[in-house]
Length: 70
Image 1 (cartoon, rainbow, N blue to C red):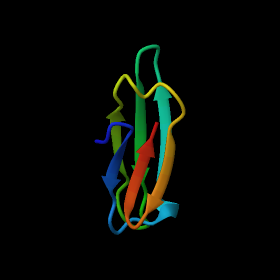
Image 2: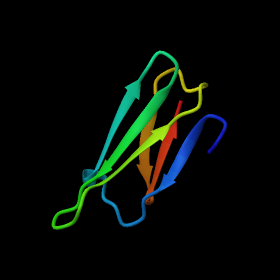
Image 3: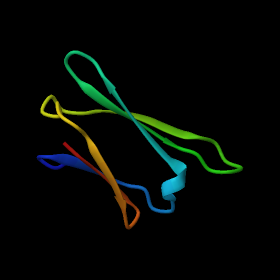
């Protein structure tokens, strides 16, 4: 966790396997991370974001790490 974002290591994943969805309620944002691999199970996680994450959420996948910034 960084003051302005979150970094998630996803070594071995390919950008085409990663799907992000931002779910918002009145008080909080949550990121739904789904990784799908051919011939394997789907990996899915919900990550609640801090209250400061009220604006747009940007995602970048660089060198096997997913960087979320707000």
